[in-house]
Length: 341
Ligand SMILES: NCc1[nH]cc(CCC(=O)O)c1CC(=O)O
Picture (cartoon, rainbow, N blue to C red):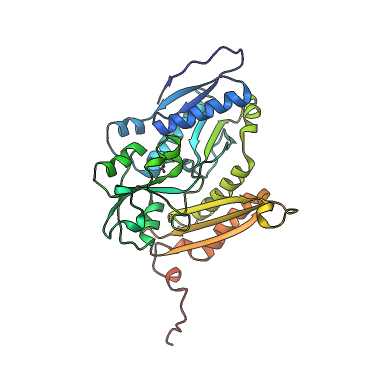
């Protein structure tokens, strides 16, 4: 791990907030957005410090590191730099954070969320439904692969990896017919116009936390915790907390790919102007090939985000989410047949 300070701050006499970031365009763009937000809201100067990982080096060299394995490396490198005092603040994509809390580190703010949906970038401006049977669709995400299979469009899913640029490049070069990506990532690097379809969550439920950023600082840095707490957006925090509680509960009993998406629905939109806002949560767990799935939803109070997510995850396990990779009850429960005695 190495750290390079890439921008200097003006001398205001206030403590400069050193923000650890990965080197990719998406990571630097997100971190710069946070740096600007910190300065605008607190008056403190902020600077980016690039944390280079073995993962970044091998990606740059074109070697392989897939999915959660590589993500885990990036998250822990930033956390190490934070705990070592090399930086004061770590910025992550929330969906890349493990559900287990990290000792010594506080999730101080979830400062907002891009549209959490997934998008398709396909050749010739096509949508998924317009792609011919047998088209090759790239994704490294088991969640996206399973949901693509479940659509029953006869698409061939091809495992790809790399940063957003690399993945779109497979379509531009003609190696693949399409790729599926987070809309948020494209929006942040100003390439959203290259998306040919935004996928409805009914077809493709996003990853828990997708589109949201996570700001972490050291537990013992009380000054920064107080400074940054107001950057937290409570509705976004409640939504992603519920999504991650479903994930944490399901992880306890299954290794299937999982999608989850929550919304805070305001009282005005509930035809009950006197009422309180409500948390609406839906989630899916699928077998890897998409043939089996458990999809459920729940509503509850915004103040009980963990409870809403935990209960929904428990109900999904009771409905067979833990057996999605084995033939058995989950696949045959919806039958009227009476076994022969
Ligand atoms: N796993 C990589 C990753 N982590 C966060 C984003 C996009 C930004 C976000 O979801 O906040 C991406 C890229 C992608 O999934 O296309």
